[in-house]
Image (cartoon, rainbow, N blue to C red):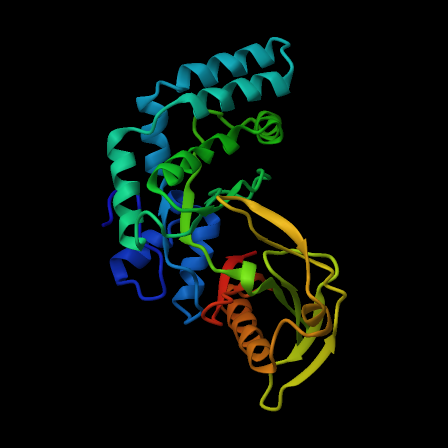
Length: 304
Protein backbone atom coordinates (compact mmCIF):
# COMPACT_ATOMS: atom_id res chain seq x y z
CA UNK A 1 0.00 0.00 0.00
CA UNK A 2 1.77 3.15 -1.20
CA UNK A 3 0.83 6.68 -0.16
CA UNK A 4 2.52 10.04 0.14
CA UNK A 5 3.98 8.75 3.41
CA UNK A 6 5.41 5.31 2.53
CA UNK A 7 6.85 3.60 -0.57
CA UNK A 8 7.65 -0.10 -1.02
CA UNK A 9 11.29 -1.07 -1.40
CA UNK A 10 12.24 -4.42 -2.93
CA UNK A 11 14.07 -5.88 -5.90
CA UNK A 12 11.04 -6.08 -8.20
CA UNK A 13 9.48 -2.62 -8.36
CA UNK A 14 7.39 -1.29 -11.18
CA UNK A 15 8.36 1.93 -12.93
CA UNK A 16 6.22 4.28 -10.83
CA UNK A 17 7.49 2.82 -7.57
CA UNK A 18 11.05 2.87 -8.85
CA UNK A 19 10.83 6.57 -9.66
CA UNK A 20 9.45 7.32 -6.20
CA UNK A 21 12.03 5.15 -4.48
CA UNK A 22 14.85 6.85 -6.38
CA UNK A 23 13.94 10.35 -5.24
CA UNK A 24 16.40 11.23 -2.43
CA UNK A 25 14.37 14.33 -1.57
CA UNK A 26 11.57 12.06 -0.36
CA UNK A 27 13.22 8.85 0.79
CA UNK A 28 16.80 9.86 1.64
CA UNK A 29 20.19 8.94 0.23
CA UNK A 30 20.37 5.50 1.87
CA UNK A 31 17.09 4.28 0.42
CA UNK A 32 17.77 5.90 -2.92
CA UNK A 33 21.06 4.01 -3.19
CA UNK A 34 19.44 0.70 -2.22
CA UNK A 35 16.64 1.21 -4.74
CA UNK A 36 19.17 1.80 -7.50
CA UNK A 37 21.25 -1.29 -6.77
CA UNK A 38 18.09 -3.40 -6.39
CA UNK A 39 17.35 -2.60 -10.03
CA UNK A 40 20.78 -4.05 -10.90
CA UNK A 41 19.70 -7.40 -9.47
CA UNK A 42 21.47 -6.95 -6.13
CA UNK A 43 19.41 -8.42 -3.30
CA UNK A 44 18.16 -5.93 -0.68
CA UNK A 45 15.77 -6.58 2.23
CA UNK A 46 12.12 -5.83 1.57
CA UNK A 47 10.74 -2.83 3.37
CA UNK A 48 9.45 0.70 2.99
CA UNK A 49 10.72 4.23 3.50
CA UNK A 50 8.70 6.69 5.56
CA UNK A 51 9.02 9.78 3.41
CA UNK A 52 9.98 13.39 3.94
CA UNK A 53 6.29 14.20 3.39
CA UNK A 54 5.48 12.10 6.47
CA UNK A 55 8.08 14.03 8.46
CA UNK A 56 6.62 17.35 7.32
CA UNK A 57 3.09 16.23 8.23
CA UNK A 58 4.34 15.14 11.66
CA UNK A 59 5.99 18.53 12.31
CA UNK A 60 2.85 20.35 11.14
CA UNK A 61 0.39 18.21 13.09
CA UNK A 62 2.40 18.34 16.34
CA UNK A 63 3.03 22.09 15.94
CA UNK A 64 6.75 21.54 16.30
CA UNK A 65 7.89 24.42 14.09
CA UNK A 66 7.42 27.05 16.85
CA UNK A 67 9.35 24.82 19.28
CA UNK A 68 12.22 24.49 16.80
CA UNK A 69 12.26 28.22 16.03
CA UNK A 70 12.16 29.16 19.72
CA UNK A 71 15.04 26.82 20.61
CA UNK A 72 17.16 28.18 17.76
CA UNK A 73 16.46 31.79 18.77
CA UNK A 74 17.54 31.00 22.31
CA UNK A 75 20.74 29.37 21.05
CA UNK A 76 21.54 32.41 18.93
CA UNK A 77 20.93 34.55 22.00
CA UNK A 78 23.51 32.60 24.00
CA UNK A 79 21.92 29.36 25.21
CA UNK A 80 24.13 26.25 25.09
CA UNK A 81 23.75 24.45 21.76
CA UNK A 82 23.46 21.03 23.41
CA UNK A 83 20.60 22.22 25.61
CA UNK A 84 18.76 23.82 22.69
CA UNK A 85 19.09 20.73 20.50
CA UNK A 86 18.05 18.39 23.34
CA UNK A 87 14.91 20.44 23.87
CA UNK A 88 13.92 19.99 20.22
CA UNK A 89 14.58 16.24 20.32
CA UNK A 90 12.52 15.91 23.49
CA UNK A 91 9.58 17.66 21.84
CA UNK A 92 9.82 15.29 18.86
CA UNK A 93 9.81 12.21 21.06
CA UNK A 94 6.86 13.43 23.10
CA UNK A 95 4.70 14.07 20.02
CA UNK A 96 2.35 11.53 18.42
CA UNK A 97 2.43 10.62 14.75
CA UNK A 98 -0.58 11.98 12.82
CA UNK A 99 -3.24 9.30 12.27
CA UNK A 100 -2.77 9.29 8.48
CA UNK A 101 0.98 8.77 8.83
CA UNK A 102 0.61 6.14 11.53
CA UNK A 103 -2.02 4.27 9.51
CA UNK A 104 0.20 4.25 6.42
CA UNK A 105 3.15 2.88 8.43
CA UNK A 106 1.04 0.17 10.06
CA UNK A 107 -0.47 -0.85 6.71
CA UNK A 108 3.00 -1.10 5.13
CA UNK A 109 4.26 -3.11 8.11
CA UNK A 110 1.28 -5.45 7.74
CA UNK A 111 2.34 -6.08 4.13
CA UNK A 112 5.74 -7.20 5.44
CA UNK A 113 4.02 -9.67 7.78
CA UNK A 114 2.72 -7.55 10.64
CA UNK A 115 3.14 -8.24 14.35
CA UNK A 116 5.76 -10.91 14.93
CA UNK A 117 7.79 -9.87 11.87
CA UNK A 118 11.33 -8.76 12.77
CA UNK A 119 12.24 -5.40 11.26
CA UNK A 120 14.92 -2.75 11.61
CA UNK A 121 14.19 0.99 11.58
CA UNK A 122 16.93 3.38 10.45
CA UNK A 123 17.05 7.12 9.93
CA UNK A 124 17.73 7.88 6.25
CA UNK A 125 19.08 11.42 5.77
CA UNK A 126 18.31 12.99 2.41
CA UNK A 127 21.59 14.93 2.39
CA UNK A 128 25.19 13.98 3.10
CA UNK A 129 25.33 15.95 6.37
CA UNK A 130 26.72 14.16 9.44
CA UNK A 131 23.90 12.71 11.54
CA UNK A 132 23.82 10.05 14.25
CA UNK A 133 23.07 6.71 12.60
CA UNK A 134 20.07 5.82 14.77
CA UNK A 135 19.12 2.19 14.24
CA UNK A 136 16.46 0.17 16.03
CA UNK A 137 16.82 -3.58 15.58
CA UNK A 138 14.69 -6.64 16.28
CA UNK A 139 11.34 -4.81 16.43
CA UNK A 140 8.36 -7.18 16.32
CA UNK A 141 5.19 -5.11 16.70
CA UNK A 142 3.47 -2.21 14.97
CA UNK A 143 3.59 -0.29 18.25
CA UNK A 144 7.39 -0.57 18.42
CA UNK A 145 7.73 0.32 14.73
CA UNK A 146 5.65 3.47 15.19
CA UNK A 147 7.71 4.49 18.22
CA UNK A 148 11.00 3.92 16.37
CA UNK A 149 9.85 5.97 13.37
CA UNK A 150 10.07 9.02 15.60
CA UNK A 151 13.84 8.82 15.09
CA UNK A 152 12.93 11.91 13.05
CA UNK A 153 14.46 13.54 16.15
CA UNK A 154 17.97 12.52 15.00
CA UNK A 155 17.77 15.45 12.59
CA UNK A 156 18.29 17.73 15.60
CA UNK A 157 21.42 16.25 17.11
CA UNK A 158 23.79 18.83 18.55
CA UNK A 159 26.29 18.30 15.71
CA UNK A 160 23.63 18.50 12.98
CA UNK A 161 22.10 21.70 14.35
CA UNK A 162 25.53 23.29 14.78
CA UNK A 163 26.59 22.36 11.24
CA UNK A 164 23.43 23.84 9.73
CA UNK A 165 23.88 27.03 11.73
CA UNK A 166 27.47 27.34 10.48
CA UNK A 167 26.33 26.84 6.89
CA UNK A 168 23.34 29.17 7.18
CA UNK A 169 20.81 26.39 6.47
CA UNK A 170 17.21 27.10 7.52
CA UNK A 171 16.52 24.75 10.44
CA UNK A 172 12.83 24.63 9.52
CA UNK A 173 13.37 23.53 5.92
CA UNK A 174 15.08 20.19 6.59
CA UNK A 175 13.43 16.77 6.73
CA UNK A 176 14.28 13.24 7.87
CA UNK A 177 12.99 10.19 5.98
CA UNK A 178 13.11 6.84 7.81
CA UNK A 179 13.41 3.31 6.41
CA UNK A 180 11.77 0.14 7.79
CA UNK A 181 13.15 -3.18 6.52
CA UNK A 182 12.87 -6.86 7.31
CA UNK A 183 15.63 -7.99 9.63
CA UNK A 184 18.24 -10.16 7.98
CA UNK A 185 19.13 -12.81 10.56
CA UNK A 186 22.81 -11.97 10.55
CA UNK A 187 22.84 -12.70 14.29
CA UNK A 188 22.94 -16.38 13.31
CA UNK A 189 24.81 -15.66 10.08
CA UNK A 190 27.37 -12.97 9.37
CA UNK A 191 27.88 -9.40 8.19
CA UNK A 192 30.54 -7.05 6.90
CA UNK A 193 31.56 -4.79 4.03
CA UNK A 194 32.73 -5.10 0.44
CA UNK A 195 34.66 -2.38 -1.40
CA UNK A 196 36.35 -2.28 -4.76
CA UNK A 197 40.03 -1.30 -4.76
CA UNK A 198 41.82 -1.30 -8.12
CA UNK A 199 41.32 -4.78 -9.60
CA UNK A 200 40.34 -6.41 -6.30
CA UNK A 201 37.32 -6.30 -4.04
CA UNK A 202 38.17 -6.16 -0.34
CA UNK A 203 35.69 -7.97 1.89
CA UNK A 204 35.42 -7.92 5.70
CA UNK A 205 33.28 -10.57 7.38
CA UNK A 206 32.31 -11.24 11.00
CA UNK A 207 29.91 -13.63 12.66
CA UNK A 208 26.71 -12.03 13.88
CA UNK A 209 25.70 -8.40 13.60
CA UNK A 210 28.78 -6.35 12.72
CA UNK A 211 31.09 -4.65 12.60
CA UNK A 212 33.90 -6.29 14.62
CA UNK A 213 37.59 -5.37 14.49
CA UNK A 214 38.90 -8.96 14.39
CA UNK A 215 37.00 -9.88 11.22
CA UNK A 216 38.03 -12.19 8.40
CA UNK A 217 39.64 -10.25 5.53
CA UNK A 218 39.46 -11.32 1.89
CA UNK A 219 40.76 -9.98 -1.42
CA UNK A 220 38.71 -11.18 -4.38
CA UNK A 221 39.57 -10.76 -8.06
CA UNK A 222 36.17 -11.09 -9.78
CA UNK A 223 37.42 -12.11 -13.22
CA UNK A 224 36.73 -15.12 -15.43
CA UNK A 225 39.17 -17.07 -13.23
CA UNK A 226 38.49 -15.68 -9.73
CA UNK A 227 41.40 -15.33 -7.36
CA UNK A 228 40.68 -15.22 -3.62
CA UNK A 229 43.17 -14.40 -0.87
CA UNK A 230 41.92 -15.22 2.64
CA UNK A 231 43.04 -13.95 6.05
CA UNK A 232 41.21 -15.56 8.95
CA UNK A 233 40.46 -13.13 11.77
CA UNK A 234 40.31 -14.02 15.46
CA UNK A 235 36.53 -13.41 15.61
CA UNK A 236 36.49 -13.71 19.41
CA UNK A 237 33.00 -12.24 19.87
CA UNK A 238 29.78 -11.71 17.96
CA UNK A 239 26.67 -9.58 18.43
CA UNK A 240 23.31 -11.38 18.54
CA UNK A 241 19.71 -10.56 19.37
CA UNK A 242 18.77 -10.10 23.00
CA UNK A 243 15.29 -11.04 24.21
CA UNK A 244 12.84 -9.44 24.06
CA UNK A 245 14.64 -6.81 21.94
CA UNK A 246 17.99 -5.18 21.38
CA UNK A 247 21.35 -6.93 21.04
CA UNK A 248 24.10 -8.43 23.19
CA UNK A 249 27.70 -9.46 22.59
CA UNK A 250 28.71 -13.07 23.31
CA UNK A 251 31.85 -15.17 22.76
CA UNK A 252 32.09 -17.07 19.50
CA UNK A 253 32.37 -20.85 19.51
CA UNK A 254 35.67 -22.63 18.82
CA UNK A 255 34.32 -23.72 15.41
CA UNK A 256 33.39 -20.12 14.54
CA UNK A 257 36.85 -18.86 15.51
CA UNK A 258 38.53 -21.59 13.48
CA UNK A 259 36.32 -21.28 10.42
CA UNK A 260 35.73 -18.68 7.72
CA UNK A 261 32.50 -16.69 7.60
CA UNK A 262 32.08 -16.81 3.80
CA UNK A 263 32.38 -19.49 1.14
CA UNK A 264 34.15 -18.88 -2.16
CA UNK A 265 30.78 -18.69 -3.95
CA UNK A 266 29.53 -16.04 -1.51
CA UNK A 267 32.73 -14.04 -1.91
CA UNK A 268 32.36 -14.11 -5.69
CA UNK A 269 28.77 -12.94 -5.40
CA UNK A 270 29.76 -10.00 -3.19
CA UNK A 271 32.57 -9.15 -5.61
CA UNK A 272 30.15 -9.14 -8.56
CA UNK A 273 27.77 -6.91 -6.64
CA UNK A 274 30.60 -4.53 -5.74
CA UNK A 275 31.75 -4.25 -9.35
CA UNK A 276 28.16 -3.67 -10.52
CA UNK A 277 27.62 -0.97 -7.89
CA UNK A 278 30.88 0.82 -8.72
CA UNK A 279 30.03 0.73 -12.42
CA UNK A 280 26.53 2.05 -11.86
CA UNK A 281 27.57 4.96 -9.62
CA UNK A 282 30.83 5.52 -11.55
CA UNK A 283 32.94 5.73 -8.41
CA UNK A 284 34.06 3.33 -5.67
CA UNK A 285 31.29 2.33 -3.28
CA UNK A 286 31.22 0.39 -0.03
CA UNK A 287 28.49 -2.22 0.36
CA UNK A 288 27.34 -3.06 3.87
CA UNK A 289 26.08 -6.64 3.59
CA UNK A 290 24.57 -9.30 5.83
CA UNK A 291 24.10 -13.05 5.53
CA UNK A 292 20.86 -14.57 6.82
CA UNK A 293 21.82 -17.57 8.92
CA UNK A 294 18.48 -19.28 8.31
CA UNK A 295 18.24 -18.95 4.53
CA UNK A 296 21.93 -18.56 3.69
CA UNK A 297 21.12 -15.59 1.43
CA UNK A 298 23.26 -12.47 1.19
CA UNK A 299 21.70 -8.99 1.25
CA UNK A 300 23.05 -5.49 0.80
CA UNK A 301 21.92 -3.21 3.66
CA UNK A 302 23.53 0.06 2.60
CA UNK A 303 25.55 1.58 -0.25
CA UNK A 304 28.12 4.20 0.75
